Image 1 (cartoon, rainbow, N blue to C red):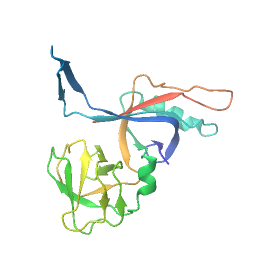
Image 2 (cartoon, rainbow, N blue to C red):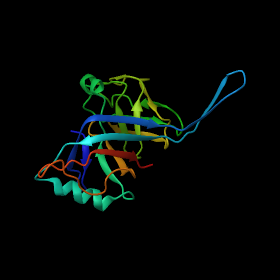
Image 3 (spheres, one colour):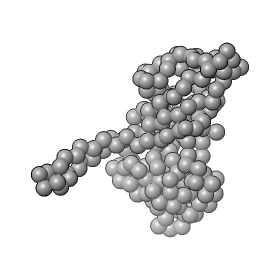
Image 4 (cartoon, rainbow, N blue to C red):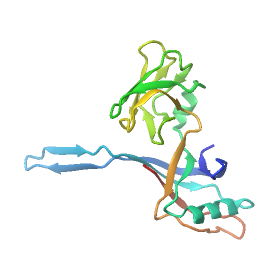
Length: 201
């Protein structure tokens, strides 16, 4: 169940379609007179989510208080929406451990710390940082030499650090175009419309 969490990590508003998860990774691009394109990509990256929320009735006050109290400056947690294909393919129930240096994309898995299959396209989070990463390769069990590639490059080194693949929490902020209040689609159902969340980095 993906959605917005309160301070006790209870889901107070579930995400519903339409939903989009975007990678904001700034680039600078220019074309020469010969129409060659030169592209420079920055190292900064964050995830951004645009979604609607399930209309609420009897528990609408929880979301109302949350949106007003957090405003645009206070962080909060959400459960990150996972790709449906990755959720269906994943069989791993463990919390694998990995080691990797800062600014690298490849995480070496500690032998025998994973059982089952973790597909590429899975959002993960390491226990020593708040940044969310996306797996670029599959991981099936963890024999000697097993690894998994992630995006973006690691912001912090990991050393025999565990990572989670289920109920991954992302630290977010409400974006400025999100309603900080309440709106009703009729006299009972609170529907705040489109909500935009940005990863706090």
